[in-house]
Length: 194
Image 1: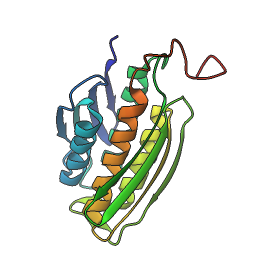
Image 2: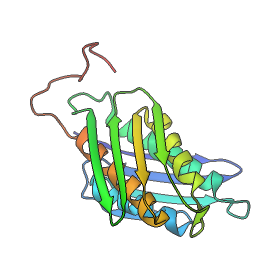
Image 3: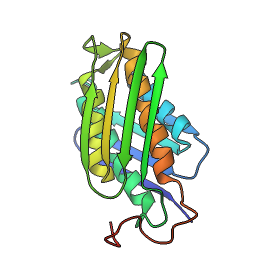
Image 4: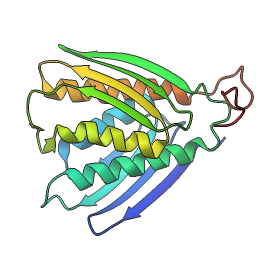
């Protein structure tokens, strides 16, 4: 089964290229121009075991909004494309990830229903060059484009730990959800379709 894809998007604000392999080893080559965002995406790849290559050139002279948003939209689209008809997958996944004083909990349904409930508490406005607002907004963009439901909460005293735990918990939940279910043939839905 080939669960690989490549997505390209070019606008007046950004140019994004995403290559993704759901059945990888967690290898990542990430370049968005935002160091913290690169770190979060690298961590996501590593803990989901999804191979990920992302190259984004954005209008960082404005701020980080378009770069993060468009990157996460493309990542979500690539994720959706690679899943195909979602036949044979586990579909649901959940994970709790502690990182020192921070804790994140995530539950996902990658069954084609886009929705996001993101509850992340930050103390500051930025983590390096990344706005903390863009963590939540980026995850919402990913959920919509990936046609997946994500419930994710995270809190702690250190904003870096909070954001990283959030991405790691999402990665671990997705790793479970995209796994092939050896006992299932077809779609994991009583409807027979997703």
